[in-house]
Image (cartoon, rainbow, N blue to C red; front, top):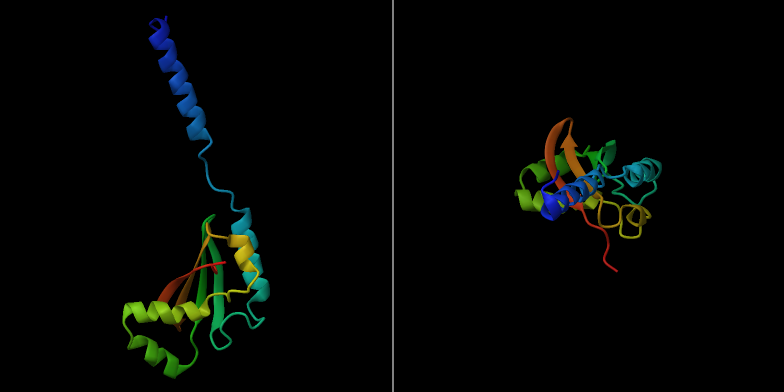
Amino acid sequence: MFGGRQGALKVWGLVVAALLLAGCGEDDPARAKEAVSWIRMHKHDGLANPIWKITGIKMEDARNIIVDVWVPNPRHVEMLRSQSLMRKSLIAKYACPAARAGIWTIVKDDIKIRVNLHDEGIHLGNAICTPPRA
């Protein structure tokens, strides 16, 4: 029916492959949701940049969180606009959670937090926040 022993091995190979693919489903978003909740609860606790204002926090997917940050100071905006992309990215890291923030125990190394700096809707720069190294 299946072409003997080789046919049976092929069928079993297909069954194993199907089971492996079924196990590769979507990532569990529970930790990312917990991280978004943590950011919402702690966004005014002094651990983030005290000058810039968080205007939006969203979970893009189970591995990516986006934090939108408004830069209200016109002098900061002008300074940011005059910088290279690399410098903008380094400056945007000041909007990342502090190394001692509890969020790092939630996101660990597998959930990325990206901060986007803006001025009244105009993009100024962005950075990927990196967890502290032990």
